Length: 408
Figure (cartoon, rainbow, N blue to C red):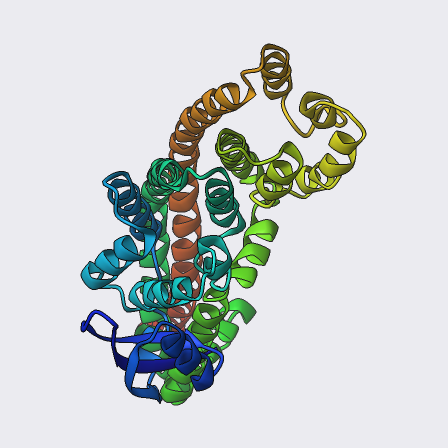
């Protein structure tokens, strides 16, 4: 899709000018004329680079849903609500999406179908809830519910980020000090010791040769490092790449239990949200399964649709592998299914797992701190030993001739 800017006079005399995304200029012209708008110009925008990397955060989507719920409850139409929010938003990408949404609604399109064209912004859960709200005629309640859930997701993400902040700072500082040592300190030491032509231990010699290479090719090292960081940032900018990396990292032995807790919290909250919004059980399970990152959970989740279609309960499907989903979760869901309170039971479960996650994050950071300090100590100690070894060797060679001269 391409970005176009148009200016037109509506039938009521109001002048509108905005940028939208469309397949072609003719599509915009046809839509404007069908609404009896007088077209002033429609031109393609060549510079869309300002939108690259301009992401829409969870809190921005939550605010959008909150504003939509308030305005729809006040009696405003969907188009009027979107136009007001669009005029107030500062995020360029969000503004472009809202303007396209407003324009496409004039053609008679549905909100969920239009937003589905932006999968990098609106996930399947968001779209399924909006679609359910449109079909049930309770879109204002859907947006209100979506805002509550997005705020809950935002709080959960903040807890995870807060817990990881200290280890991230320590590890960054460790790499920063190591980088300074390798680029500035070690090259100068290497020049001194390698010129002396003294016998050196193999680890020391490798370290000094590495330092000499870095010192002789500083620009090349900086260029390679910059390209590497740029490549990592480029890969992480894609949603599928992030999902792939998270799925691999989440299955590492040390942090597997932590990610399992995150999966359980997100799965139960997502499933509860979808069921409360009127989404069918099969569709809700399909969408909620996409939040799982653990391989064993994904394998069980692949059987959800088949099991429910055969008449099994959710608890029966989850219990096919008792080691994957905890018995507490299975028994609680079974109780909810028997009493007809599955959605509220799932929401309670999500609150429980989020509280458990917070405790596990605290435990994880408490354990991680001494491990990081130990790794830093070992790394610094190894470097010091490898550098001090040649110094002692030089001192020994200097003292040897001095003692010999004293004997004479």
